[in-house]
Image (tube, rainbow, N blue to C red):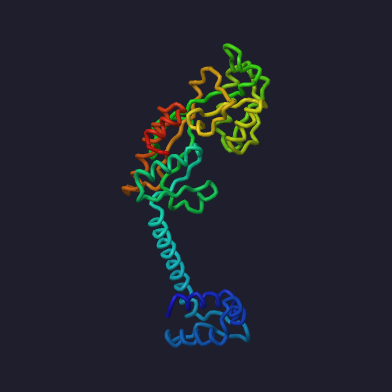
Length: 305
């Protein structure tokens, strides 16, 4: 008796009809009937009571069915664990990256240059639930640098106000945030932290900002700003990779409005490859913090071409 026979048996029980089960399983009805007969001979008992075309379990059949369901559930659970193990062997480190996406190519390239034998899989937000059992880390923006179990603060990202060089206010000496009260502020539609930072800074400056949050990429925001259609408060250190040459940062103190980037440990694995990625992230983001937007300095440190 094998797993397939148990699966067929359970399906017959569900339909209470041999013909319908045959159609669902794409197995000839005589073959199903022979299978049930062989099972009954093996168990030395009748599994079904027949009433015309309809069949139902006998008392012995009910007992056998209850055990068959458990066996199939255990088999599926074992298969799932094996699949996850095989997937783990293919993907040494699995990370969900919710922020600083622009740094991802440089991060992965620098990591693979140092650890060519380690495979890193980066999941999109939409993949997270499906792969939840295999996730090692989540990199995301944070509002607090307070210590927390399974959390490592990677860096503090300064925010800057960006405007076009051609903006009428660009040349104004001592330009303040309040001078921009009539401007449209662009933020990413999937970045609640930047929305909150922008809103708080403007409210502290004495006005409620006109925030436009239908932008789905950093490039879109910076293109709008470059075109003189508004301004943006951006995380300066992690957005340097998509600078537009026509943009300038206003010399205005926003030091208390920082975006914190943290690494959250999910799997808790002590695997050497997983730990290597964790330590490299700490080094990489530490260098991003020190580089202050100088991409060439960052590339030189990691020897990334």
